[in-house]
Image 1 (tube, rainbow, N blue to C red):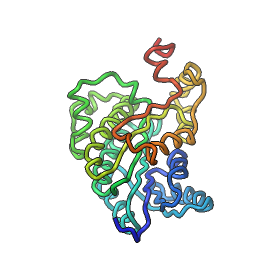
Image 2: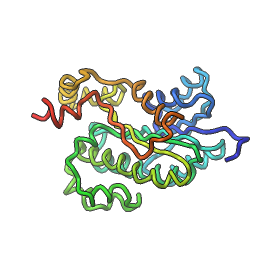
Image 3: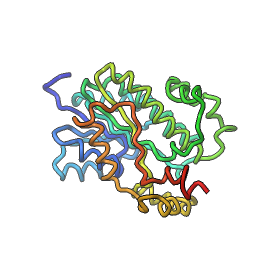
Length: 278
């Protein structure tokens, strides 16, 4: 680590959750916002800059290793990468199954591989997964291992992920998000050898522009039923996700790595053991 350079937190996905986490963990650090759509990153950067953060932006396509490498080169040209917030992705209402697997599953694997090569000692990261990963049917030990440790470039070739097995966008999303938490657990071993930590957060329905798309889409009635029958009886907020991320990335979370934190207001509990099970 070059102590003469700033410490960088890279935020991939400049939406509501990424911004909320950046606010909680970015004080005294340099924020680099990366998004597929430059206008999204620029709007977020303006808000954060006006709130007192030092911030710049760049473009990234998380489904491209070359693009992720370019992002890392850009970041390391500014300073030392000590934090990663990966909050980019597409939902079942936004894309077909093939795209979801490429962005949400393969893209996350690429990010973990590449950032695991450069994260500084004492650094930490969070990956935003989803409650959907907890509603996927139980997988075998071998299937879990394949999702966790198959090299990223071979991941989409797994038999379990072929079109005859993944029959719709929701299933692709569930496999992707289960895969995210499994891969983070495996990558935590490698990150740990660098003195760094990585965890996932699996939020439920969090009110963001993406969630509003879902609520107004074909699955909207199902999501509203989830909310109504959950213990909390309400959706969550990006600030609540950021509070958990702050713990995981901060000094009070230094004994936590390779873990997945489900925060869904009790939806998954109701799905397996309550009224949503029917």
